[in-house]
Length: 399
Image (cartoon, rainbow, N blue to C red; front, side, top):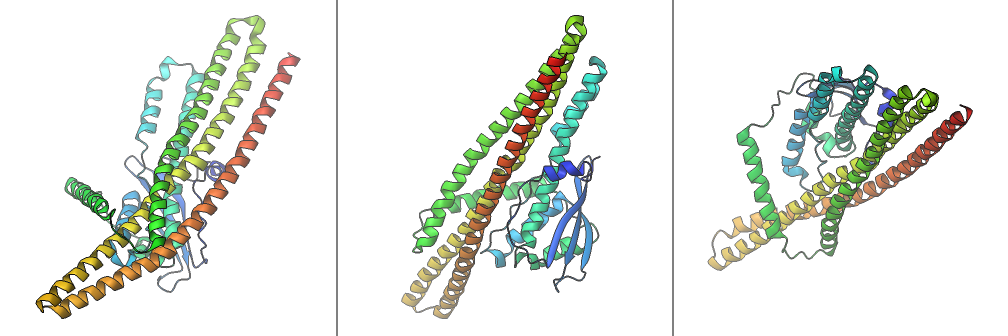
C-alpha cells in the first residue's frame, strides 16, 4: 500500500500537466491523499466552495477511478453540454507491471548480494512511486478542469461527486456494456466519416476543423518521439548503474585499485540518480503534456463532431419541411422540428467558438510554462552532473 503523502518533495517535483484556466476561487478542489490497494486506488478529495448550489462550504469524500469515469460519462451524455469541450477522463491506474517487477525482484533476493538487492528494490519502488503520483495528478487535473469551467462546475452530478460522503456504488462496465460501447464508438466513427464531406458555410469552423485534424496527427507523432527520448535518457541511467556495479566488483578483486575503483563506482552511482531524475522530468514535463493534449484535442474534435451532427440534423429538417410543403401535410410539425434544430445548431456553434478560443489560449499558455520549466530543469540537471563529475575527478586525484 502506498499513499500520496510519501515523499512530499518528490510529488512537488513530479507535477504533471498544469492548467492555465482562471478559477475565480469560488470552487477549489484538490486530492489531498490517495491509497493504492490491490485492485484500485482510492482518492481523498477536498473541496472548498462559496457557490450557492452546494449545500456545504467544505467537503471531503473518497472516490475510486470508476467513479471518475461515471462522472465523465454523465457529462459527455448530457445534451446541454454539447457545445462544450468535455475534459478527457483520467487514464485508468495500471500498476500491474510495476508490482510484477517488485515481486520478481523479491523472489530473486537469494541470487543477489544484499547491496545489489537493496539498490534494485529501491529503484523499482522509486519507479512505482513516480507512476503512482502521476496517476494522482491526472485525476486531480480532471477535477480542476471541471471546477474551472463556469457551466460544468454547476452540474448536479459533479455536486454529487464532491458532496455525497458515501460510496456512489459505481461498478466497472460488464462485457455487454463494453461491447455496446465499442459498437457505439464504431457508429460514431462511421458517422464522422460520413460528415467529413459535409459542406459547412462557416469559414471559422472549416479552418478549425482542418487545424485540429492536422494538430492531432502531429501531436501523436510528437508523443511517440517524446517517449523514445525519455526511454533513451532512462537507458543511460541504467548504463550508469551497471558501470557502477562493475567498478564496485573490481574494487574487491584488485587491491591495488580498490580505492580508485570504489570512488569511481560512487561517482557513477551519483550520476545514475541524476540521469534518472532527468528521465523522470522529461516524462512528466513533456510526454505527459503531449499525452494529455492528445486526449483533449480528441475532446475538441468530438465537439466539432456534435456541431456537424447538429448541422446535418438541421439540413434533414429543412428537407422534411420541403417535402411537407409539397404534400401540404404536417407542415406545422416540420416547421417546429426545423426551428428546434436551428436553435440547437446555433447554440452549439456559439458555445463552440468560445470553447475553442479558450482551448487555444489554455494550450499555448500551458505549453509555454512546461517548456520553460523543462529548460530550467535541464540546465539544473546539467549543472549537477558537471558538479558531480568535477567532484569525482578531484577525489580521484587525491587518491
